Image 1 (cartoon, one colour):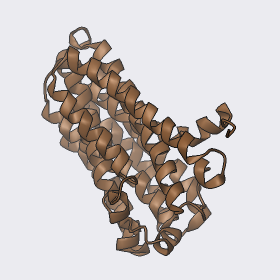
Image 2 (cartoon, rainbow, N blue to C red):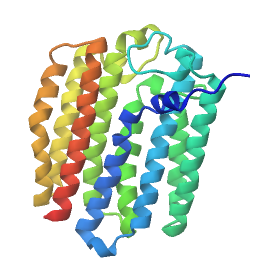
Image 3 (cartoon, rainbow, N blue to C red):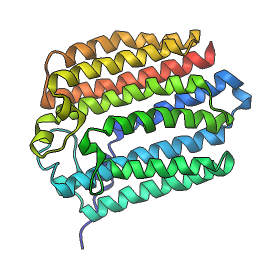
Image 4 (spheres, one colour):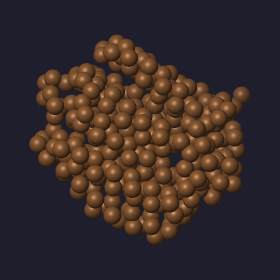
Length: 293
């Protein structure tokens, strides 16, 4: 019988540094709801459930990617963080069970949220779970076809942000869609850095990510475009408080310069961390700006 990995390894496999990508859209979606309806009119239970769903989906995606990439052998030569299957720290069956458990728990929380608001959320949840598994799993994973950024933008940008606003006030507000687009753009920027780092090894194993399809130079341009789009969204929200998020332009300039300096491989790991901090700072400033002004 295979020995179960330690808690430390499970936490590392869940990739905790990616979790802000699940928290930020919920915070922003909640802030839009508060800005529109006031603190006393929002459902905090709905917001908490939306956060639970978002976090569990993120963890589920991370474990599912670990499992699917591991059994395909695409992680055998890896520059980035530890992968449980590829490193031999856990068996494929153990990691698959962790992924399915996370997605199941996300589904349970999602059903509870749907019961509180609208059963239409069940359809959204089913789509999210299928997309989470299909990213690198199944016979034709869309992450291998260059569509990973689409998944991230839709589910960790638009759906998570708009869904949280709906969970809070049961309304679809246009500002939530705009804010979600900004959040999604920075979430995509994270994936772009990740795929830029892995571009040579992904190309060798025929993993056709968007970075592989675009090539090195155009992928770096895409990163800059996504950052600019996120900043533009804070203006398009047409709320004075949202403009506070433009402060992110200062640290963003440094990250963009680093990207265009030509850093590759392991040199991009700090850039990945810096991009995560950009997304977190953007989410915090946008959320605070919306609720206090």
